[in-house]
Length: 72
Image 1 (tube, rainbow, N blue to C red):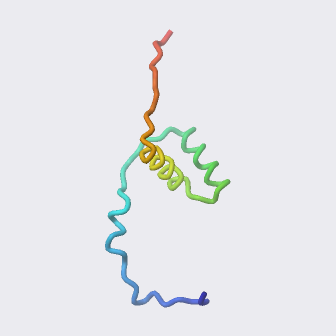
Image 2: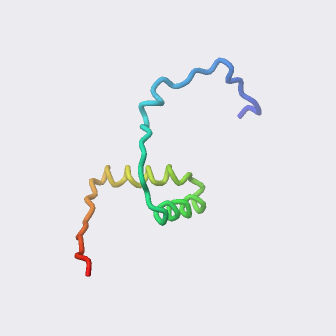
Image 3: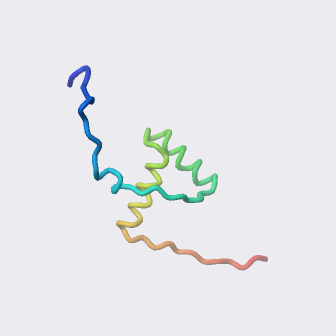
């Protein structure tokens, strides 16, 4: 590996914008803290961990199982 690289003539990847799309999600604080703790342990940014988890759910076609309970 070289000590220095010259990127003065580099071009941006024209397909990079198509790889991910920015959206807004409202995630509760305990969930964010959970992924942040995983982030500290793994060295991977917490946003990336959330994306990896959601992608895995989509690939595996996981269905969320929920049952609403009546308030007492």
